[in-house]
Image 1 (cartoon, one colour):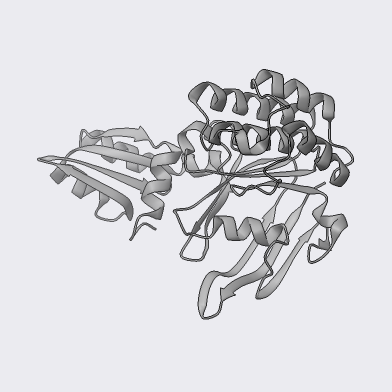
Image 2 (cartoon, rainbow, N blue to C red):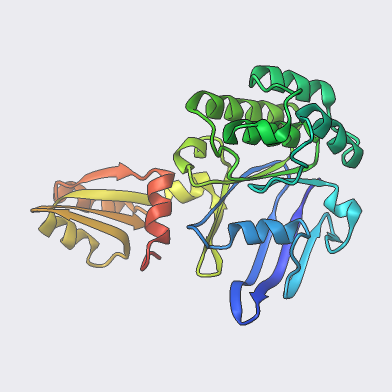
Length: 290
């Protein structure tokens, strides 16, 4: 199934707190976006889930089994990291074979087919790969692993626009063919917003948002117009962002838009717009964002 549960988990490095009292349930067969600013703790969280770091407090389980030094539980997950874990002198094709030793369900035929699509030379040594080619190799290995949970940490590093689009297409096809849990951690939010089902935002060492993308975007809207009229509308609201240009002002609000609000917006002759996920993320994670 691939159900990951995190209960009251904290991670300290000496006196420094990286994550504090996190409780989270990652449901199976969904595509998640794990978002946060640099240093928020996204990579730390993924390393903790994959038993590459140990929590100071709390518990992490997959399908009810603790991940701590549990090969069976860890074997249900495949984690693509920014770091290179394969020997530099190893050839790409040998890396595929090596991965199959640890993940018996690794699909070699699929990996070779993806290599052809991405124009990746499997006879090339890993140390000879460009940054983009190295990312492509790791993407292919992750997709072909056939693990129940796939995790990608900054997966498109060095990829050009064509290869990024091909990756998103193959990721979706992989998910459709064999539904699984997928977690994407990236800063290029506008490119993945259409494929995400749920979003987790880390801020201030904790979970700021854990919601479906649909619900989150339905609860966000912006109003724009004459500054005095925008101020009148938001006087009893809690905007997460405001921008002023001369006498023109816009405000982004996270909250229910009632019929009465719509009437007020119309009477004040304000413009109302939806908010894109990337913009909403920026507003929520700015200092002072709620």
